[in-house]
Image 1: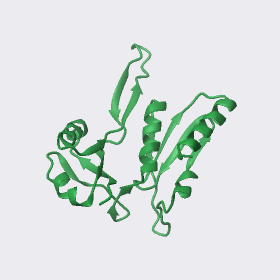
Image 2: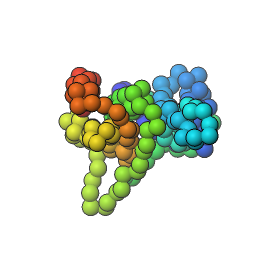
Image 3: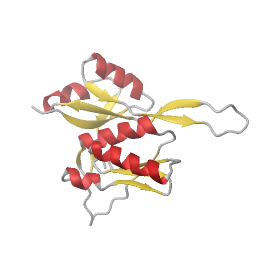
Length: 173
C-alpha cells in the first residue's frame, strides 16, 4: 500500500504532544511551526514557535494505519474538507516546509467555499499555478485542506527570479 498524507485534528494545544506520541509509534508526522516575532515596542524582539495550523498535525500513513491514529491519545479525528478525509498532496507538504524554512510570521486564511465551485487538485500542474509572488508577498493555496498561506518578503526583482527558478527546480512553482 502507498502512504498518503492526511491531516488530523488534535485537542487544543496538544499538537506537540501528539507529534511526539506518533513518532514513538514510528508514524511519520509533520507539525509545521511558524516563527512568530513579537511587535511590542516596549519589549525586546523575541521569536516564538507556534503551530502554523492550530490543533492540526500531518501524518504520512497507509490506509490500514487509520485506526491506530484514531486510538492515539489527544487525537480528535481526521480532517475533512468538502465532505471527505483530506488527502494532502506531497507538493503541498513541500510548499508548507518551504514556507516554514524561508519565512516567519506566516499568515493563513481559510478558503471561502461556494457550493457551485469545486476546489481540488487534479494534477501537479494545477497545483503549480497556485504559487504566487506579488507585491512583496509570497502566497500559495493549499487546496486539499482549504487554506491560503502567505508571508511578507523583502526581495529585489532579481531575487524574485532566482526564487521562482528554485521553486521550479523543486517542482513547487
